[in-house]
Length: 499
Figure (spheres, rainbow, N blue to C red):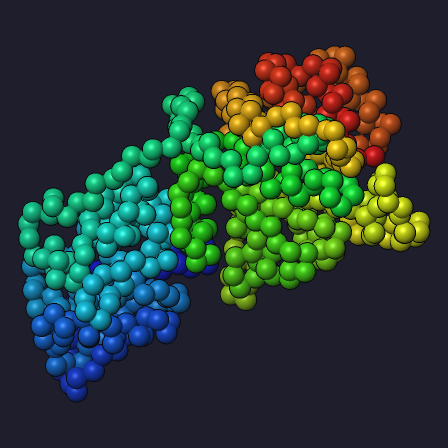
């Protein structure tokens, strides 16, 4: 019995699968067992056609392919190539597959294709230190070449793949990895990548200086932000520009985003740009939090989750967001499994001041009564609002207002603040620091400590709110290139708290 190593996606991570085969006497048949999905069962026809097209004889025996372990459900068309190897080379006893993991979908003429699952599977196996050598097609090789510490061999078709195992010299099949051509910085021996492309620019926004400063703080430290203002004042316009000025990314973050894109059935682009997710307020709870598939909360990891018209989202969604906003993880329970997602995203939200939107307007009168405004505001619970770091009221702009800063200038400030945070030895940006790191990096002098104590009493700040003030103060100090948190930094951080 021969065995080939492959793998399958199990929820969000990969599980190693052994593809086994036996050829016994009996009526000719071809069976695949081991909880194989329909797309794996269909591989019987693809494999048979590919072999016969390339003049291989299909063994007139009872062929059984087993995908082990049998208790895990397997999906994916990438099992075609391992199955084809086991059938085409079943008589060649000297060939040993144990050093390789093999993935590839077969066309009817024997050409080897990529599939959406191959990249996330190999990335997951690499993180588990389960893979060293991999055989795939050239398109798959180009994607997985971004993953460090694995050796990649690429082939174009079934004949070339069979030749790969028959020859002793495999050097000509080695895929040469390409170096990243994106801009990067090296901090403490670790490389971080960024891209200077600004599809939407801050220079398009006139006025709103306070909101721009708050947005800069939010991006530089990964602080959750809520923008409130009348329709047309620029809330969404400001939010859409944030993804272009986000902090540099490590290779680990770039690969994680690419993995989520692949699992979302999108082509990974491997650019060092944070993802932007903006679900509509009518979206279901499952589509945002997650259920049988990935939700927006999981897909926004290492990026931005923007909720426009925040009070119009259902209370079930808003209350379910409390856990990922606080713990940066989300546990989703399914019928037979539990999945833990990372949720280290920048939460950006926007809302009107009242149902009609004109409460803060200088030109239009508000049509809402006090009860309607109260009901509208009460859609956001205090525990939910307590997870917001920066609360900004945006007024209508004047026709004479001018743009004062570009996205390029904002991005340079963000990168400078990012360097300071990483040079301090932080593993996370200021907004995602835990209690231990806050006491280590967010130190106040005696005068500032006294001011914070008074603010805690006067504004009834919770322990969580107090920590958020400290973290925002640390980011403001970083943007000012200050090693210590000064009184002015703390006072500015307190001004962004909702009262």
